[in-house]
Image (tube, rainbow, N blue to C red):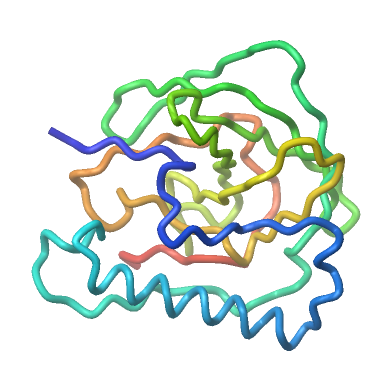
Amino acid sequence: MKKTIGGAAIIIFGIVTYSFLGNDQETLETYKERILRERIERNNFMSTSHESPFASFGDTIVELKYFPINEKFKITAKIEKIGSKEYVTLGSSNGAPIKYLKYAYAHFKIDEKPMKLLILKNYKDVRGRLFTGFADATSGESTYGAGRYIDLDFKNANRITIDFNTAYSPYCNYNDSYSCPFPPKENILPIAITAGEKDYKL
């Protein structure tokens, strides 16, 4: 039986992969140091934790692969909350449908091109955690073909920072016993997001 893992349920270290505008005081140097530190922590978790998707493989040293940190992909997004309760059913890697609450849209630009991402909420999660799953022109090439995730944590903000340098692959990229939701169709971005985690199996 495959384990189902939703985007917001995969928060490993409690690292929040977003920031409000007030965090813009962080320097480029300290920002890069923080991202590198988080990547080291993720490798350590994957290598040592009994909750790691690699745990069933026995002792192993995991070194995930990443694009170089690129501040271009740390973007400010305007939030459009979805007032009524709307749900979306996503396909998954094992074929079982998974239902999420449509929470908001994030509107932003990259290279002056307007884009948006649907932000989802796992309504069965008592903590109400948010995430977005996306695919882009790197999917199936240098990144996991079924898309990547970014965890989010905000309530009433009108603008947030979404950092694609923190984008990560779902557990099914590492271990076929997991089942992971595919991104919604509107979250297929028409550009290459050369930031964040690369495909582990390439």
